[in-house]
Image (cartoon, rainbow, N blue to C red; front, side, top):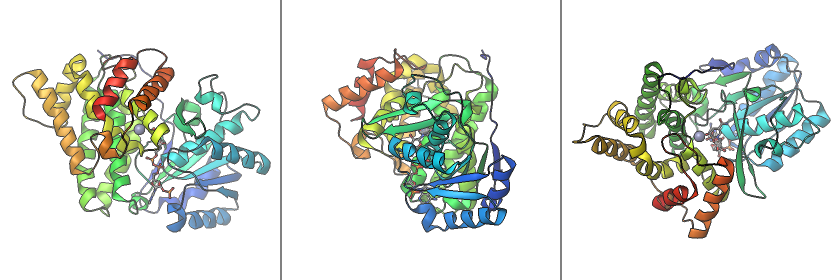
Length: 394
Ligand code: NZQ
Ligand code: ZN
């Protein structure tokens, strides 16, 4: 049965080769007069993209300042620094040039400027809800997080090692420039981690016990098959434009909630479990998801059997087993096989971390603080369940 829903995806997507040339006119269209160009470590500088953007903005007569240095699992400290800089310079628009980390850092700065007298971290601790956010736009350089069209913003407090999210339509970017060519410089590990994350955004919405629609399932299954196919192509042929384009578009559609229409909001426990791993061990988000997913799946599949069977048959396209449980398990095994094929980890050891019992306890404790009560849709998980899943993934 379909649940009621509202679908809101206001971001203007400008997709294709050389679309970054339109950045000036897009900023003007959305009212930006003084822009912070925000970016990461080095990739966007090394490729010449930042210089290109500056030249285009100069040509359009748009004032700009810049702040680089965003790290994966972006830090609260830089958000605060960016907010102070923008207040001093009277910035009214933030342009993120990069991936999910840069876009999320831009969103958090934009929240800070929307309510300049308040501490932005309160939003991530859920102590208050955001009321204002200045506009942002993005030039995407990695297909993964889907932040370019999502309502979500994920920031790590590097001092407390808490990785927390804040969700609000206020932070949805005004525009997203998506040129698949810009992703061709990615190392394979980042490309594949991105594919794992993209898939997981739809899988989190797919494995539910509440509300489903045939239309939504067809879109979801098509998206998942498309990412599987093109992740394998990119593993061998990273400069394949068509495959880059397919994955890039899937990345946005996977997390703008198109694949969640009609359900109960999805499961999202793999994400919550992974965010603790990211906060404590600073792992690459998509790879972390791949490392935890199969352990989560084996722990919950009996409580969500029809969806696991459907996934096995329609997405992983396995032969049916003798029982539904066999079929579901074949689907999980096929997913692990796919991860291995694209060199993604299927457990924490392969991810490169070996948490102690105490660290697992701490991650479960922290995850429970975020959830507040047993959570998930495929199966509700409490702290002991979380500990069991982390241990199975070790
Ligand atoms: O810093 P640079 O030098 O740019 O290097 C980055 C970074 O090391 C590199 N990179 C990006 N584009 C490149 C490139 N290297 C070469 N060529 C290019 N074209 O890739 C590395 C990863 O970048 P990052 O932005 O961290 O990747 P991703 O897009 O996967 O973002 C991950 C962050 O997003 C959060 C994750 O938790 C994590 O913090 N998420 C955000 C979501 C959202 N806002 O909706 C949802 C997701 O579930 C996720 O939680
Ligand atoms: Zn994700």
